[in-house]
Length: 133
Image (cartoon, rainbow, N blue to C red; front, side, top):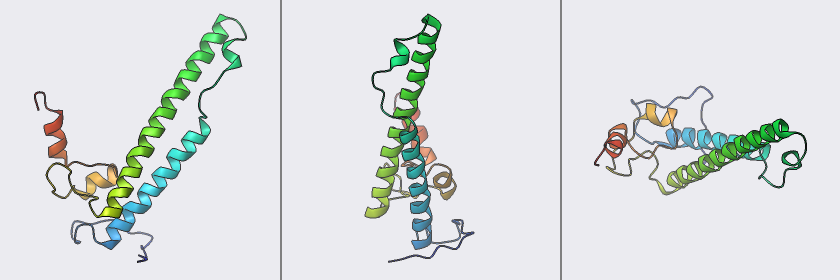
């Protein structure tokens, strides 16, 4: 089923939750985030043997090591984001997207718009983060 999404569409609480327009809106948002994460990975290729770490004085080597560590952290962050995005897209495909994995309640649209990979309502997230929970 193809859904035509108006260019200025924004999900609204006045609509039925996760109607076809909302689902398509979040699918597109997630696909854009996926493309961004893939670009980030392409911009930071996997760390390999780095000649800059062996050449130059100690300051150059230290600077190169810091740069390499920064690239590794960025790559790991992008890989983790890509994994979460793929999980969210799978939830869209199986019809569970937008519903809290702890309670089954709808996640607020405002939260999903800000964090499309969210799997918990803010209340469920707070319970998980509470010490002793």
